Image 1 (cartoon, rainbow, N blue to C red):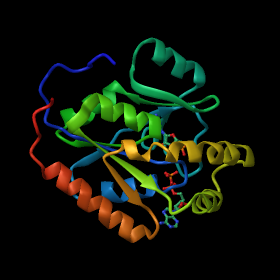
Image 2 (cartoon, rainbow, N blue to C red):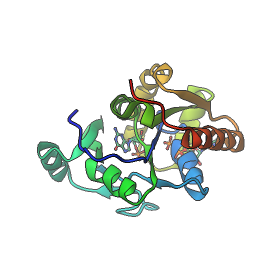
Image 3 (cartoon, rainbow, N blue to C red):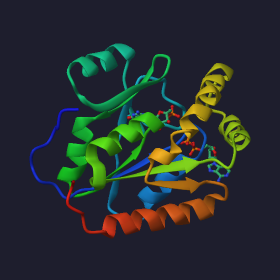
Image 4 (tube, rainbow, N blue to C red):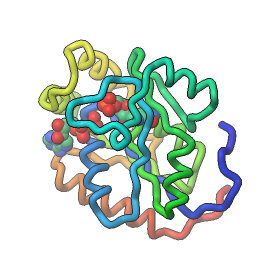
Length: 202
Ligand code: ADP
Ligand code: 5GP
């Protein structure tokens, strides 16, 4: 990936990844409510907006055509076709926008996107994998969330096991069994990382 910035910035990045239904969005929202100086990186997405979502807050909802145009124009730091015709991507302009405000960036991205962002930013980034207690729990949570069609559920379940096999590539793994415990652990890990003096990049 080409480096999009050449000015020195002290902002850090916190990445949350997990298979769909593990609970990462819930945990990220809780961290955003805490006074940690975090701001959410709003991704671009080509899937339809859910009822409870707000364009420009949860995602920038765009068409597949517009998404492909942005890929061509190198607007993305990373992007994935997470499910067929459902493209998701981190815009370079998001990191820039958030750092310019003096905030740290927090991401809710899929497992491969998380690994790519971590590889790129190295010690500046903390990559956390949210692990469900079991695949059964994940399936149950995703069904109870009632946001996906049967077809989309199957796609998400199919992908989950493969995604879980990448957990060891992350800096930390949080098991989201009891939600309150997982949130407390996430707060502790993120606070420690944000307070830590940056080590020289190797
Ligand atoms: P993801 O962003 O990883 O797809 P969500 O944060 O949307 O997952 O969580 C999936 C569903 O599971 C949501 O309905 C959420 O309220 C619920 N959930 C999250 N964590 C837990 C937990 N520890 N126990 C039970 N339900 C949970
Ligand atoms: P959902 O449709 O449930 O909001 O998200 C589906 C998956 O896409 C989730 O795993 C979510 O984290 C991921 N995702 C959201 N934004 C991005 C992004 O910018 N890049 C990548 N690679 N994945 C993303």
